[in-house]
Image (cartoon, rainbow, N blue to C red; front, side, top):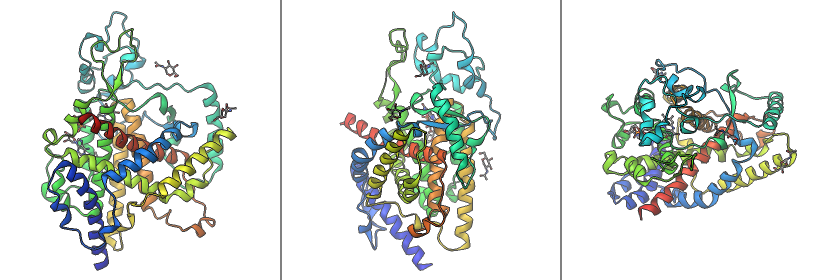
Length: 455
Ligand SMILES: Cc1cc2nc3c(=O)[nH]c(=O)nc-3n(C[C@H](O)[C@H](O)[C@H](O)COP(=O)(O)OP(=O)(O)OC[C@H]3O[C@@H](n4cnc5c(N)ncnc54)[C@H](O)[C@@H]3O)c2cc1C
Ligand SMILES: *[C@@H]1O[C@H](CO)[C@@H](O)[C@H](O)[C@H]1NC(C)=O
Ligand SMILES: *[C@@H]1O[C@H](CO)[C@@H](O)[C@H](O)[C@H]1NC(C)=O
Ligand SMILES: *[C@@H]1O[C@H](CO)[C@@H](O)[C@H](O)[C@H]1NC(C)=O
């Protein structure tokens, strides 16, 4: 027990230390960070700056080219599952709009005025709000080339021949492949009641809450986090970090041309960073001082997934990145190996052994942790915007894979035992894990752009 407590203090110290560097930039009280620091603080030389440069210089460029490979660009997902928790009243307006034919005289909303009107589409029950395809920011391009379709049959046969150890829902009959490169995560206008309800369900119903501040109206305050135990805090932070990442993306990849953007001259619109949007979402004034904490949580979830990949490296190195094209498969495998060697060289990996240690309590906590997380993956079926749901599902599945690698115990074998029992990670788990860290890596990279713009 004593050892456990000590470990916790070291652990908290490690991350407080990380935060201190950030706080100095934020000109917050940095003394506070040091009060808990006892013992082996040198364990963490990790700062926001360290992660920034490591990510931006080493990880981001590698991931970017890796994720363009065929193995990683096609993600199999079921976007048709109904929301299990509430009547899905927005679904109709959201999902089928782009396949309904429009009245010819119907003027696309974006041409009538401010594109912001788009968001009403999601917040009100306009069941037949029919807009032109190119106007529908939610539009999911499901085009898959004939050749790729043919290849996928080979992949499925190959995968089925492998001895996979768990089943995930890409086996659903309704699951289909989506080309991620054709459908970048970016601003969609999805907002209002539907989006709020999803985030709220995730935070209020599924996150562990600090017991004292039980309230349905307020989100969790970062200064209350210490009322929670380590595992609960970690859970909150990864969700918050994911949320931050999504919101960084939509700010960095925003539809800039609001009035005449989607004209004949410029049918796809002009996309790029929107500093005002970013500031609104993350500055101290507009977020009740929480913005910087949310961004810190982004770094936190990044470290969690980075560690998971590092831990699974022996498995990922052995995996055949099978697409049927020998030279492409070889390139992919080499690119993965290269990425793994860089990730393994990162000196400040998250130490998951501090979590769920020992007692029965810890096992119960681990069980709850899993249940809560499963629930969050199901809530993704309630996201009322195809493209958001696609990326939401991909990223939660990636995070789930990371948590499984870190905490299931299946990946704790050492190298010698590896030969005895070869673990398999399924295609979709690898695809989601690598794409998930790709998103986080991109967010951190984009933060630097915003930092420059603010200067
Ligand atoms: C799964 C999912 C995927 C989405 N994907 C996209 C997308 O691809 N493109 C797109 O344009 N929109 C997407 N959205 C919508 C987007 O995330 C916002 O919900 C929307 O832009 C409305 O923003 P908002 O200002 O109302 O605050 P929201 O982001 O909806 O946040 C609601 C409340 O949560 C709190 N909060 C905000 N950020 C954090 C954080 N990081 N940590 C803790 N608490 C926080 C704040 O109190 C805030 O008021 C997605 C939503 C969901 C649920
Ligand atoms: C979908 O993607 C394909 C392949 O890039 C492209 O040819 C097609 O025009 C896209 N469809 C729409 C509606 O953008
Ligand atoms: C799962 O989420 C739903 C909807 O938010 C909630 O009603 C239910 O109690 C949750 N279950 C668990 C086990 O957290
Ligand atoms: C295999 O992949 C390489 C590069 O990745 C590409 O140049 C080549 O055309 C592909 N071959 C086939 C048969 O698709």
